[in-house]
Length: 174
Length: 322
Image (cartoon, rainbow over all chains, first blue to last red; front, side, top):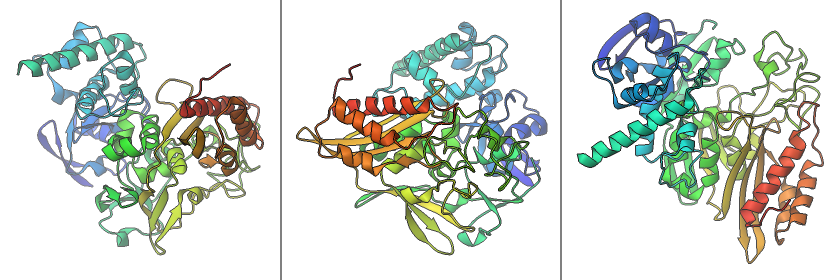
């Protein structure tokens, strides 16, 4: 069936079998291989993308159900010449070893920081009404849908914390 | 994944009885990839608009397409029904909560490994084939309401809170009706493949909550890792006190049965009483009187006891003593 969706600001018209996941559409139909296939069952988070601004597992989403949506993948977040704040901090803090989970980690963290700006609580929040300080526990809980088999977790958490602090001080300057 | 026909519903008349409804898809697609479920026709209901949370004179009406993350973060839910926010936030991951819907979450299937493995006997997947879990690895299986046909658990967190909150389920179809949450899920009995009272062609349109109970709301979940894991046991509790006595007690239990488990006799024992360690121990004894372990899950009996005791101490402001 034919679907039309916006991917990283570009309009795409695709012909897909209804069984095609958004993950497979991105990787094999469009050639955006930054999004990774890990478990293909919604358990590891390597395939995380943003669908209409929200993080989702693209392996657990049928492409045909995303008709008319807008998708942001790691390719839409930054480029080697123009890294996003999170990407820069992942490099600075060594937030990876093999790097396979990293696109998913960064897409997930990008959306997660927006969830905090929206005031969403988490399981780790002492108070459902906030304030939500970006403690180790808060970040670990909010990022629990992204596994890292190299176990670079402590550096990933440091990178996310640094990116959040950087954007906060930027907001203060602005 | 087996081939299927995909279509989008624009109204109730598009829901044909033989078709399988898809909303968030977080559980259904996984089961389709494993070929545990092989629908021939998928109907996408995301366009039906059941995505509102509305305040009502005597409670809250939650559309069945409201996403788990929106429900958990909704100001009225956080403020008046915190046990529901807490249960939702204890479940799945940030990514899955953004996709999973209220209706779909209630209908999620068991995570019994024998149900997932199509080479194994399973009366739920293939009625009459037997139950490979009985006598097998039973770490995540039920201790209440089992049958010799099935010992699977309902894996949800949200549903446990909805049970404690005395929610109602609005169903549309040939016979529109409203069903108490208590009656919505079924015990396995001789028909473990029939999990709810839904009939072919039915659709859940909303869940309604009665007026909130002002008191202590808790959702305590014990699991194998700190986050993103199913409950070994969980307790949803709403406890109110009046002049030093328990004036409201609603306790629902997850990870222990084919449906969200609740025992009115336990609540009756607590009502009107002054909290004490002795009272709580008697309540736990009563709750666990009918619990039955299957080797690998015997540990759930003392674990549920301790979790209940901890929640009762916490909600009544009593110090927990060893």
